[in-house]
Length: 163
Image 1 (tube, one colour):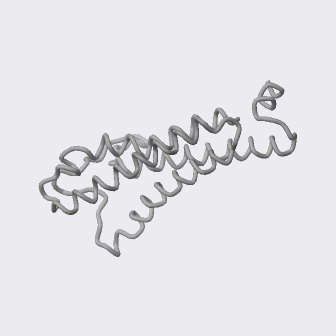
Image 2 (spheres, rainbow, N blue to C red; image 1 turned 180 degrees about the vertical axis):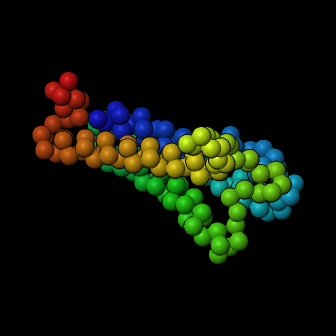
């Protein structure tokens, strides 16, 4: 259970750290000429902060052994990153924000749902998926923590018995 939680937490951490670098270090964000230089500065700062948080999370995940406390800290880092995104989405009317810029913005991708093509925002789709992965990770982490507490044994021993 803990190995599954670690793998899912790794994917969750990469979702808020590696993916934004790939999507934002181009003309849609960092080098967008329609943004003010100070706005671009804040974007680079935010993305790189998430990269360093992700590195910390990966360190916590893969050095944890069977210590679930480190895994919970990594999960909380993901909650903070994704919580910031969803807060920005919800408060768009307050600060007059948009999910996509009209000039050089990340284009939506098209998906067929019930035979009809629909435009999906890349960020909302990606971060919805990432939150579901995070939820799955914390479910496995909680189950592993409870099993260890109830059996007074290590996660490795529990996984061997359950197979």
